[in-house]
Image 1 (cartoon, helix red, strand yellow):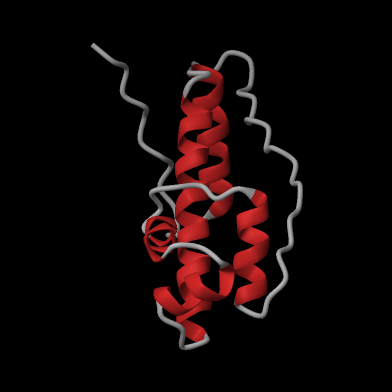
Image 2 (cartoon, rainbow, N blue to C red):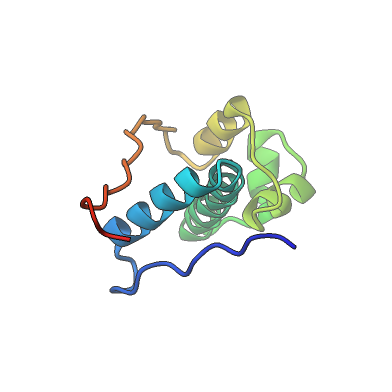
Length: 119
């Protein structure tokens, strides 16, 4: 029987501090939790950004694929969050959209420590 993660803390929708704290606590309890979850979040974030940028420029998937020297089916997979693109592919897609790819490194939030004597 697999262990179910506890529910995230209640708070405002989009409360990133609560979500970050929840994720940090889950990573401590289950080392396998983080990587799989983060990969899914990355896929969905890329999908949302790519589709939004393409639609904002009034391009079809076929037009974007042609400009980026890719296949339409690959664009569709990326936009559905079914794949993580390689860095070079993201650069080509950004250029085809008239954009620049920008990456950043962020610190991983640390879990909050419970006070002594607290269960």
